[in-house]
Length: 122
Ligand SMILES: [Cu+2]
Figure 1 (cartoon, protein in one colour):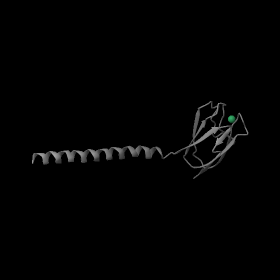
Figure 2 (cartoon, rainbow, N blue to C red):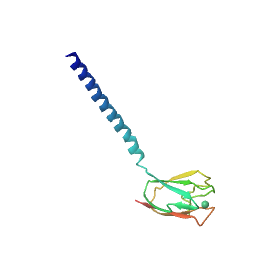
Figure 3 (tube, protein in one colour):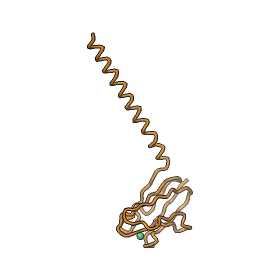
Figure 4 (tube, rainbow, N blue to C red):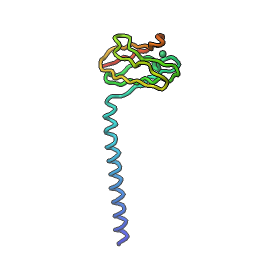
C-alpha cells in the first residue's frame, strides 16, 4: 500500500512539473510573438551587390543591411535621403524601419552602380 501511495505521489509530481514546463515554454513564446510585430528582413551587401537587390515588405518592417565585403558601402535612399546608412565597414550593419508605403530606391554612394529598392506595402 505504501508503495502505491509513493508511486502516485511521484506520478503526480511528474505531471505537475510537466504542466509547469509546458506553461513556462508557452509564456516564453509570447514575447517572441510581440517582437515579430516588427519583423526584420536582411539584405546582404556582398560582391558589390545588394542581396536581394529588390525586396517587398509590409509597412513597419525593419530592414537590416549587413556589409559582408571588405570594401565599405552605404545604403542611401535616392529620393530625399529618407534613410542613409552612412559608411559601413566590413561586418557593420544598419537597420531602418519603413513606416510609409511606396517604392524606395537606394544606392551605394561609394559605388553608385550598386542599386536596390524596397517596396513598402500598406
Ligand atoms: Cu558600395
